[in-house]
Length: 218
Image (cartoon, rainbow, N blue to C red; front, side, top):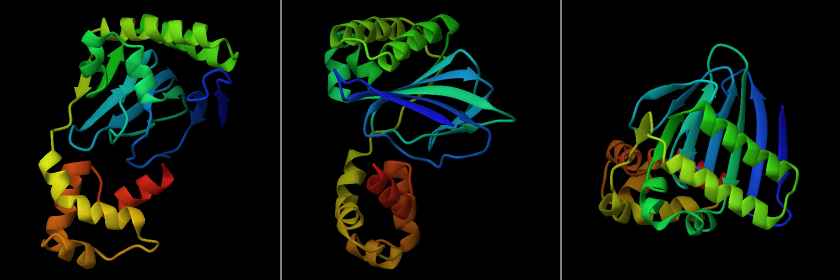
């Protein structure tokens, strides 16, 4: 069950309220800056290299664009909210002193007060309030987020050199109409298929074909 809303004044801001009982999400990324709210039940959040974290009602999770993650219900009904927005817009409304921290890693904050503030901001999207109201509400929310110590933080390593090395493989995965074989992809960068899978997971958090599927979905 899911309910969606998109601001007519700011179409790059949208919200979703969902209820799940079964595992439903594979590791993936968003091409937007996202904030998640746990309303009811528990869930297990996992990053590609960081292990898993149990999420509980009142928790808030902040996910920058391009960060691989996976979140699924644990032991019953899970009700949550997600807000997605253009990351440049979000960064422009966030104090410069906080920008690098807010947009460089996934953070989990266990704060019912923060959850209440974020949930009220979601309401402003569902009730289609003005651009000024939504922007001011977001600015205040980000100030609160950055003023709250994270209970868990996922900082992905800087793999720019490896990503540059794998860029011909990523281009092929992105542009080819058909799924290329691992042997074909590995040959492009002079690796074995097993080396390629390990390198892609280290660089992106996903295997080559999972990365392709994620890009195509996005």
